[in-house]
Length: 198
Image (cartoon, rainbow, N blue to C red; front, side, top):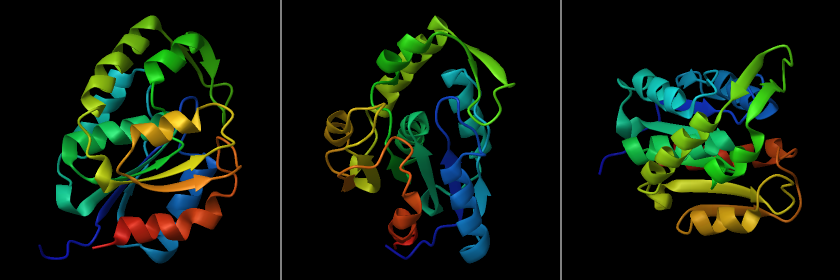
């Protein structure tokens, strides 16, 4: 198979997060500084999982499947898994949500954004039901085409569940760290090595 260099990169943030998250900004700056040839897209995702996925699939409809990749953090890691299941593309998952319908059912109600608390949104039981549907779709993803960075110190998600969900993925298991992967800059070279590999 001929070498297909990466040309399009999608980044997906987590629940209550935004394109202003630390990891999203670090990735965007890395693309600008070292890989300006890449088409970069980091959208603000709506509260509705169905609307989020519909919007993502519409936005990447013209992207070349063999030359695109997706990176996602937390809930964004779950969405990245869904995108990979639909497109067959390579994916990097940063402490990915494994059972989002179960976990986010505890967060039904009104929330403010992490980076702009004035941005209010309501997360509903209907949104949880949408996640259940997406979980079935995500199950078809080829985990062999994925790279997961999982922190044992994640205070939000269970690292054991993350590792078990992605059995064939390349895995970087961090002994400590946290849900945000505060030392993410230390791992960016490995992320891009995976993304840019032939």
